[in-house]
Length: 169
Image 1 (cartoon, rainbow, N blue to C red):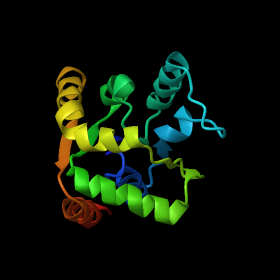
Image 2 (image 1 turned 90 degrees about the horizontal axis):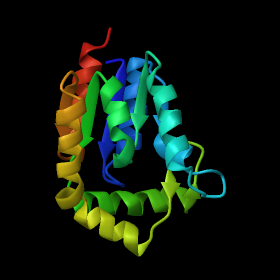
Image 3 (image 1 turned 90 degrees about the vertical axis):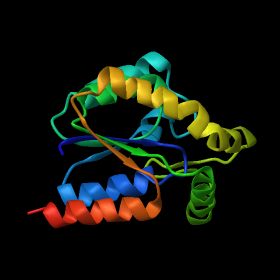
């Protein structure tokens, strides 16, 4: 596990999982929101965002935390492990409430971008129906070489982390 792509809906727990895996595996974490948004919450252009990801993905070891489906293929092409947090919408909604409580809005040093809008809530509610098929298609096309892990609950994610920890030297 040297190049790990963690994907899933907002509030699913990608950043928490990324940082816990990083601590176990001693692998640097890259949060895509920290790259995508600047300090004024302005978005990076699509071409620049893709170019940055290509450069980052060329490294030997990384954990990339973030969805950004339009550039998922870049990460999946280089990943040796793809982890999909396929958790229910209510779990993600609770996750964004917890994040709001913890961070109080805005973008933070760990890359978390905490902005709750009606469109973001709609995105979360429709994520599984709309995004799961897109993610599956990208993985089928670009990620056949990678180990693919689907985690369907926070409990499942904790068990997965314990199994990784048990196998760490």
